[in-house]
Length: 72
Image (cartoon, rainbow, N blue to C red; front, side, top):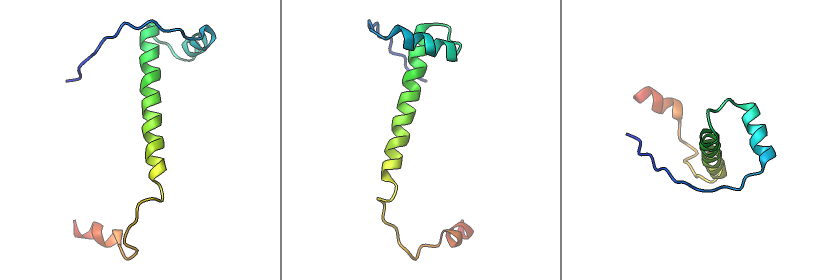
């Protein structure tokens, strides 16, 4: 079960950005718009962290993934 923490926080957000975001997506409230934006931000940052790992993991050059798949 997902716990919900409700935080009342006054935000000073550019009105033009809010209006543009609201025009792009049909949100019931500004709260749902900000929550959706935060979720997208988090997803993007997580993906970027994974991409940073690209090429940094050493693996055995003799590893044969096809052979490994046949064993399972």
